[in-house]
Image (cartoon, rainbow, N blue to C red; front, side, top):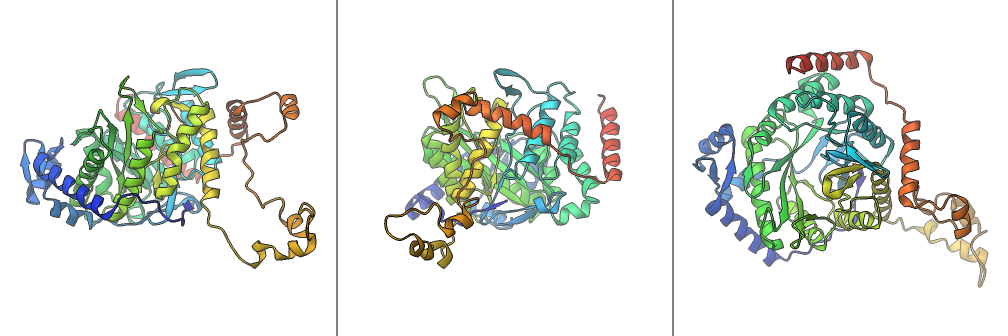
Length: 479
């Protein structure tokens, strides 16, 4: 977990915030939000909200009352307590890419497998800048659809001792994730007291929460596990093309989801989610790392703080098909405002390629390097008598150099950040070493990390109980 104490970059004036509030209040009351689950509709109906078919017309003041019940900060426990994190405030937690059906390894793009999933989990364990391997790091297409969630959760629980995300394909999958987490942590009470699963609940933008997402939300919120309530907005496709309109829609969708979680269980932890970018208006393709997405990201941080909620946004996003220069600068264009905004939960921090269709091994390493460098850059300076080094000036005097000064000799190993991926060799040495570009070096690094990987210890009785559960449920699910 990284603690970002740098000042937040905010771009919305008080007048702009007031105008956005007028917009989301109007959208809630006049257009409404669809909830494709009868339980959700009944909860809103019992709370006095106007319900027509699947559409709920929300009273904004009622919504704000529910939002006020959600904690502004909460702890999230990992099975290794050293890897537990705090969500909210100045804390930033980073997870790997989530959801790609395909994998890129070198020049090969192919369907993702369970072995790929396990390898990505091992890589996440090996990089200290990542607090979580995520959830669906890649879709393991060589495993049965109905039971693959069991294999994924088991891999995250046993190959890492970090945080993991819950499966949200269905309420059944969510219930299985919760049960396996109870086994790992000892009891339902243990995870209700301090949550151990964080799960992504995506809105089917515009203005619809679908039945599968809601089934999972009911399971996780009832168990007091945090849900990341995320509008999925690509401006021009899932929202109007203007940033203010997208922000108004994002607020409406996210807060309506927060309100539902509080109706399910008052005080249930939530995260104000944002996935905001735009499409290429010439081709219709999603684009990432755009100036518009960066502006929206900065606005989202300011908006979430206004509602006193932790928030999720950002990541190493790119439209590039390969881990090239475009992949690097688009990832940085998203990750830099992520730090400037102080996002609390950062998904897709490592591995995202091709608009999220591909999880890339080399890109995973490149992104980890970006995150590590930004963490160093956003660590506040310590300014004191020692760091100002007046004694070094006395020693060196005028016109000399500081290479051999005592102050330098005492600190030269640690005084500057040393990247693990970059090359600073001169041309001749770079040529002698194979003239390797960034992607080639990243490929060597991920392979070496997998060779050196050591599985974190786990009580064998717990492992056996998890295996028994997975095998029994696989049979019950018909696989």
